[in-house]
Structure formats: structure tokens, C-alpha cells
Length: 370
Ligand SMILES: Cc1cc2nc3c(=O)[nH]c(=O)nc-3n(C[C@H](O)[C@H](O)[C@H](O)COP(=O)(O)OP(=O)(O)OC[C@H]3O[C@@H](n4cnc5c(N)ncnc54)[C@H](O)[C@@H]3O)c2cc1C
Image (cartoon, rainbow, N blue to C red; front, side, top):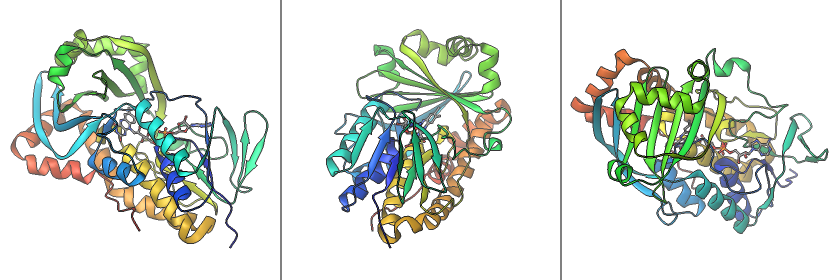
């Protein structure tokens, strides 16, 4: 079997995990990444225990990156508040810091990293990538890790996103004494009709505000800032948090999120990683974990079977993510419906063990070590 170096499209957590492990195994993967410098993308910044363990496997420590420890979950519906201990130790970390560390780690391991490269189209049959500058690259193995961004030639089916798809929004809130006190060791989820907002502290004391709302919700408000102002009026405790801090920098957004979608085996040699392989409802806070796990799984599948291992890898990722995606989808459905908020908070108050079991069921329990 001829084994050429894998081409990795996208330098997010999925692409970087695959690149690091492949390089450590002696391959010469090449990562192609659109951004030229670290950025903050739409993400809650919540690192679950799964994610932290996978980061360690890749060679990074969340604590050493300065991540803020999180031990408790607070769910807020209108004026009702319920808090419980998480079933694991978690962290809050900005994507700017995390993604920069992951790319540096892949480069240190020996992977080639090219930044400022925008991919235009993927020819899956020829295993050829067309870049925006008109050039092309090909490889026996293509690992597609462009996240929620669809690449021409490898589009997800339009029905994957549903009739009123979710939109993700994210802003950084300047450090404030009030937020530092309220969010110490806590992640807050503010639930409301057709969406939720997540709030946690980051490594530099700023807070990360991230929302997932239906497209119609955002369209009715006309802009992210107007939407958040309206939510602050109808959700007094969210309003309280926002009154104490101001957003620094512009809103980042991502549209048409295909929550619940899982890729099936594709053409030989095509590995779909991270959000290109499985998209978990974001309120579960395990998308980065799935991305890292899929990168680790793809690297070890490639070492065992080369490009031809892609079908087995994809089936295995799909099987491994099925239950967590279903449970997370169910929790999202409940969180978006006001009549379910009472039972949801009641479950946390009176049956915390069951609530913790539900949270644990949204994790992709993986063991990427050989
Ligand atoms: C609202 C919201 C909140 C979330 N909160 C959390 C959370 O708290 N915790 C958690 O674990 N997960 C969370 N997630 C999910 C998490 O962000 C993703 O699952 C994770 O980032 C997927 O990693 P990835 O490597 O597959 O893709 P990405 O992280 O999206 O990385 C893809 C990379 O590919 C590059 N790229 C894309 N297109 C091109 C192109 N054409 N050419 C070149 N490069 C390209 C991008 O620049 C990027 O660097 C959230 C998601 C949303 C929408």
C-alpha cells in the first residue's frame, strides 16, 4: 500500500489533533488553514473533562494554558435559578488561546502548517484540493476539518440544518468584579424560547458570552446587539450580567448550524473530522472534545490502514457519537421550550444524580491511546 502524507484541511482542534499524532508517528502531514493569526471564533469556551483528557493526550494542559476551573452548572430560566455540581472538573478557555496552542503543538511535532491559505473546492474523487489562489494540491488521504464551514465539493445535505437552523453568536465581555464573583467556578446557561446563552470566565478574567438562537429569532431582532438587548429585558438575570459588563470587539457569528448531523463513510481516502464528521448541540459543550477525539481516531486509523481506513474510521466515529448527539439534541429541545423549564430545573433540584447522568451521556467517551 502506498502511503503519502495526509493533507489536513483546516487547523482547528480536529485538524491539529490529527496532525500532531500523525507527525509523532513519523508521517509528514500538511495543515492548510485560512486564518493568518489566532482568532476568537463562535464557541462557548467550555472544556469538558473528555476534552481536557484529549488535550493532554495531544500534549497540552488546560491549567498550564491558564484556563479558569469550572465545577458547577447554573441553569437560569427567567427568574428561576438552579445550580448543581458538574459530574467532572471542567475549564473555560478562549479559542484564541486554545487554537494557537494546538497549531503550535502540531508544528512542534513536525507537521507542516500553512496559514493564510483559503480552500475553494475539494474534488473528493480525485482527492484534489483547489485553493483560492488557483493552485491545486492532491494526496492519497484528505482529512477534512473545516468545522461548520462547508467546502464546495463536500457540502452537507441542505436538510441537515432543518427549516429554522441555529445561528451561533459570540462576544467577549470585559473583566468586571461583579461577573468575576458570580461566575467563579461556574458555567451559566440562560435558557429561553428558541435558544440559550452560555456565560463563563476565560483565562484573562474576561467573560465569554455565547448564544445559539434560531435564525428566525435573530432575523426578527435584526442584529446580534439588538437581540441580546431584547433578551436582557425579558431575562432579568441575563440583563443583570450584561449591565455589569460591556462587549469588547465585534460579534462573531456562524449561520446554518447542522446540529445532530453525522457523516457516513465517504469516498476512499476522505476522512471527515470534527464538525465535518458530527455536530453536537452546542449547549452540551463537547464539540471540541469530539473534534479532538475524531482527530486522534483518524490518525490511528490511518497508521493502521492508510487511506483505505477512511470508511471504517467514519463508521466508527458515527457510531461513537450517535448517543451523545441524541441526548444533547433532546436537552436542547427541552431547553428551548418554556413549558419544559420547570421539569428541567426540578430534575436538577430533586434528582441531581439523574441530571449528572444526562450530562455524562452527552460526552463522547473515547480512548484514543493504542
Ligand atoms: C454557539 C456555539 C457554542 C459552542 N460552545 C462550545 C463549548 O463551549 N465547548 C465545546 O467543546 N464546543 C463548543 N462548540 C462546538 C465547537 O466550537 C466545535 O465543535 C469545534 O470548534 C469543532 O472543531 P473543528 O476542528 O471541527 O472545527 P473549527 O474549530 O471550526 O476549525 C475549523 C478550522 O478550519 C478553518 N477553515 C474553515 N474553512 C476553511 C477554508 N475554506 N479554507 C481554509 N481553512 C478553513 C477555520 O479557519 C478553522 O480554523 C460550540 C459551537 C457553537 C456553534
